Amino acid sequence: MTDTARINVVELTVSEVSQALKRTVEDNFSHVRVRGEISGYRGPHSSGHVYFAIKDEGARLDAVIWKMTFNRLRFKPEEGLEVVVTGRITTYPGRSNYQIVIETLEPAGAGALMMLLEERKKKLAAEGLFDEARKQLLPFLPTVVGVVTSPTGAVIRDILHRLSDRFPRQVLVWPVRVQGDGAAEEIAAAIEGFNALPEDGDIPRPDILIVARGGGSLEDLWCFNEEIVVRTAAASMIPLISAVGHETDITLIDFASDRRAPTPTAAAEMAVPVRSELLMRIATQGRRVTACWLRGQEARRAELRAATRALPSLDNLLAVPRQRLDTAGERLPRALRANAHVHHRQFERIAGRLSPQLLSVRLVRCREWIASLGQRGVLSRKVYLERRRSRIESAEKLLNAFSYRAVLSRGFALIRDGKGFPLHAASSVTPGMSLDIEFADGRVGAVADKESRGRSKTRGGPSGQGSLF
Image (tube, one colour):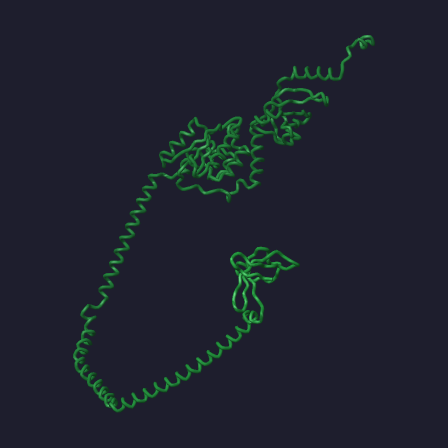
């Protein structure tokens, strides 16, 4: 190109060049499908967007997943996972580089899925979610069975039919999607919802849960490998049976559940026993109990008969007592006469010692003793009364000595207010107050006059009371 041609080239700004490159790249790579290994993945940004890179042996491509797209992804990115992504190539003018905006993300083949499954299994097992010690025992005969599965299809029909055949129970179905976007969240929400039901609420709380799905590919069953489903199943307080896929299909919920069933029908068989078998077992047990009781009774009868034969006859048992009774009957009259004779002789000896003279002497002594006691009692009473009289006279003298009347006899007077309370100072008297003055020979009523030189005066009132000066 000549110098003149170079001079005539249109001058562009940096932004114009960046926008032109952006349009060119987006027009030519508006929809691409790229395979590579995830590198530099650290989880969602605080904004919710995800940034990482996809690489192979010779190149590296920056990648971004917007928040809304990331929430809809069935498979989430993981470091080192080989994936196939679809999206569009665009540029980021702020750094002069290009990147792919991912719209879908899938593991690159079954091998990648299996590797992801094994890594997730090791991670959850290390947390103890698969330990046998935390697994619960299934109830023998549940009243309510909760089923988490699709409301349509053969799975729910097989479970209901099998439960009806074995032992009809009340069944609660929580309909969920068992494949595709959002299926894992719905399954986890159903398990949590059953556990959140109150035991005495309007909707009965299940005694056992069955999480079921028919067979399918590894991708079809992948929602049962999601961490949210596995963790919810492990945390369920209601015993849980997993019945996902066929017998050869293994998902992570099988390790977290309390019991794994090879098929949904087998899960129904694990949940309830066979009613006819129970009735047959009860009948058999009843017959065995009756037979045992009859054998026991017959054995007791045989023992009783043997013991009866070993016992002596009634005549032999009563022979000796009868002889003893006859002998005692013969000896009784003689014994009674002898006993009466002995007591008669004792009475005669005692009667000989009881003469009238002896009784008269005893009576005289008792009278003298009573008279002596009477004289001593009269003397004691006189002494007691004399002492009490002396104490009363002393108390009377002491009372007169402390009485205020002795003070009044010396020319003093006792002044009381209208209520009869003594007054001790002139300041307690107010003009017009009614006063009661007690002398040694009687009382006089008075009315207090106004104060004069610090003292109260009284004057006779209209009732004829005296005056106090």
